[in-house]
Amino acid sequence: MTKCDICNKGITSRSPGLECQSCAKTVHASKACSGLTAKQLSALRNADGLDWICEECNRNSPNRKSSFFVPEEEDDEEEVENPSNTVGNIDSEKFLKDIIAELKKVLKKELQPIEISVGLCSKRVEELTKTVEAQNKHIQELERKYTHLKNEKTHLELEVSSLKQHVRSIEQQRLDNVIEVTGVPKTENEDLDGIGSKLAETLNVDKSHILNIKRLEGRNERDGNIQLEMKQVEYAQSWVRACKKEEVRLEQIIPAATVEVSKSKIILRRALTKANKSLLWLAQQKLKPAYKYVWFQDGKVLLRKEDKDKPIVIRCETDIIRLLSTTQTGNKCTYR
Image 1 (cartoon, rainbow, N blue to C red):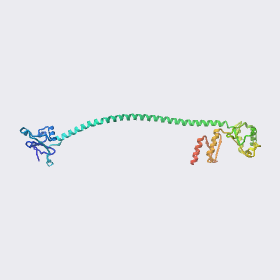
Image 2 (image 1 turned 135 degrees about the vertical axis):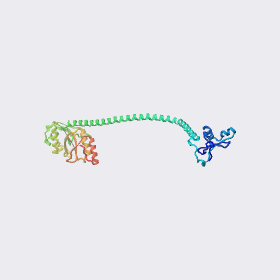
Image 3 (image 1 turned 180 degrees about the vertical axis):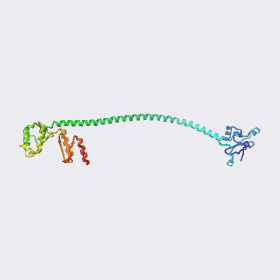
Image 4 (image 1 turned 90 degrees about the horizontal axis):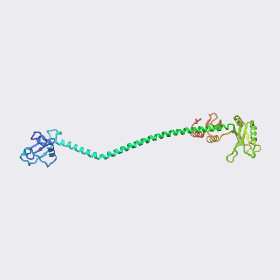
């Protein structure tokens, strides 16, 4: 093993040495053994063109060259110095620090435009976020207003429906003492008072109950019904009950009627408003035969499926549609 001529310790790959080019004297590549500074040692280590001669040979023959050498691995039997104190390691750490510092400068310069762009994007995102939050608040406010208006609309519809029913009820009450006679054709020089007397005689009721009698205008070139206005509601009720008990035919009222129509039946019924007539007709058309009985009583259209069932009240077309839907799906109707 090669030993240092100064400290007499082994020279290894971890503790390299310097060889004098004049006398071949070998020393450790350290300041203590070679007498060189750290910069001089680093220059000798990293450049082949630099020479070193020991101080003694320098005094005697300054022109001889020196060389920096590292022994083979088999000479690594003895550790001389702590590797952390070597010149090479110290220089490597400094070199890495310098590289890292330079990289930081370069990265900072390269990342600066990106940081500016990211900052602008972040600011734009914040603005958009505020805009979206404002829009969401506005939408929520509109939804609340919509819900309020929807509830108001429903409330108004219910009130309007209630008012319509109330008006219809008042209109129907005005007809409580009025009877309509169907099945009597219009004739030339018609005697309505005589028809009233014949009806009273046939039904065995008092003709004096009649306050006024007139014929209504017909539709589609048909004869209109005869309308009897009674002095009291009770009189109208008694005439209708009498007609249900006693069948009245046209020949009993108008003896001169033709044979073709003389046997036709005359019907007396309570007068209805136009709205109630339409509602009764619609109920009969839509709900029969699912409902066995459809009639009008006490200002209401009533239904009943069987004789013992409770009557169902029809107040508007919506009730008919609802009942029709339950009938088609086979569900039991519970609406009253």
